Length: 324
Image (cartoon, rainbow, N blue to C red):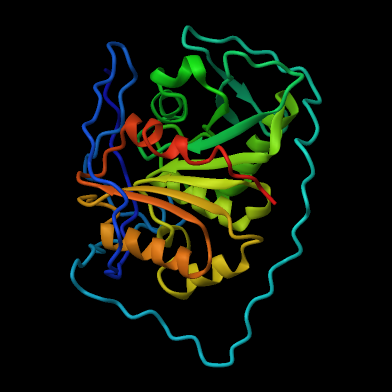
């Protein structure tokens, strides 16, 4: 197994919120010989929301377990934000509009660049893919220190589901290999990759799901909530909604403005040293209070991600999800 670089993640002030646990820590399966390595939790430098390492870094911002931070009160009588009109998507949408050449590696992965802008991404198709049929699509973003290809191999299309994979797996590179994401600027690149893949392959327009680990989870939350009408849901491993939009009213306002109550599935670790469990529980509470459907579990352990988080939980949750 080849080592992965250092994982960087944002650590914000947190609120301690009680939360029911959906499952307990299962035994973690060992990766087969030759399987790509998963990210290791080396201590990162805290990074400001929407900034890469070294850009707007926040020093001395540790979490404070056991302390409650009051959210700003919303004045009585303040008007509710009106939701925008949601375009109704009918059926699977258009098939591919151009022929895209690619060369698969031994495991079926291949790299493409967007036609406009040359943004890089990795793809793995279902083994039975045909251009005359539509498929669900999973679009993911890696954590700091990881890269798009490696993330695809252990999270979006792990070795033990490849023979039966039914979704188009897309791992966004966007020049961020080995780096953290800057959600506010990388949002446009993620959307450009989604559009480009749909020109090359038939992704069902109502079955497109965003996913992310750690810093990539921040990018997934940011892009998914702000562009909710385009997506069926968001899969999150060891990351935080409040790291995308801020503690308190920043997150509340973002959820209020979402085009619809987009589906969310979260896998968290109670000992995560970069995204404390109290912060993740607050994320869940905010989502459920606003009416967003959330599927949630927390396990013992630290920040490192595992393939089992995906094959054993996250990838099992979105089969019935549909964008409006």
